[in-house]
Image 1 (cartoon, rainbow, N blue to C red):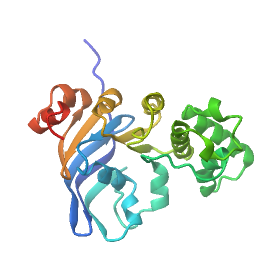
Image 2: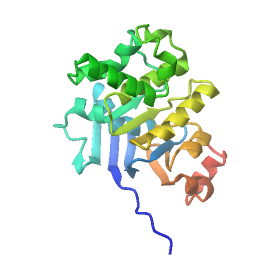
Image 3: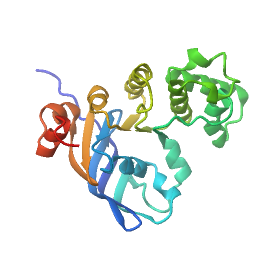
Image 4: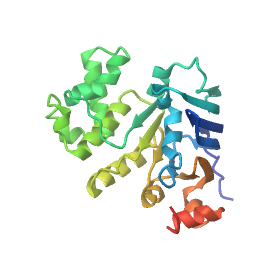
Length: 258
């Protein structure tokens, strides 16, 4: 008799989450789990709410006025949307990589060490070890090990994006949030980052927003389709693309709308 695999545990649980930009309802009672050490892709047409949802996970919306959350996002049984949450600690645990590479105008080494120093890690040997580890995790070490003192803005676009990933990895997050992180890159750089994301799920949980359905099908374990702020369907990726339960999902993944 074949041994049954235990289902993956949830690292985040989104329960009846609504989000408002001022008076504008951007997310409408979204409920879904985020499975630990798995890749979850958020797909859907432009303006559907997938990036809005992604930014709820690490409270990026708090940087702008007149925004409001309703519902909850549970992490270790605690609602991370509560007002008394330590936002700096939360963003260390849920690191984010944006659509456009964001190297700081400083050396490659200092880019990676930046977040470590914010956590009061000052010992030079420790910093060197952690910087090298993060660059190796991001598959960038061999390309920049002789350029650590050079300004990071001199790297190629693909290298800059992997640098952004390494900078996030250095503070050892539990979850990494990717917002269209390959949309501005060439196919070779995209392939490197896709391979990297798949490797990273051995150590952490990944949530990725993508417009590229082929990418979602290639890299993710679970996929959520969103439309006009609502969750249309959430399931294992293979089911979403080959056996969707919702007619809208079927039409979207087959290219008949969106």
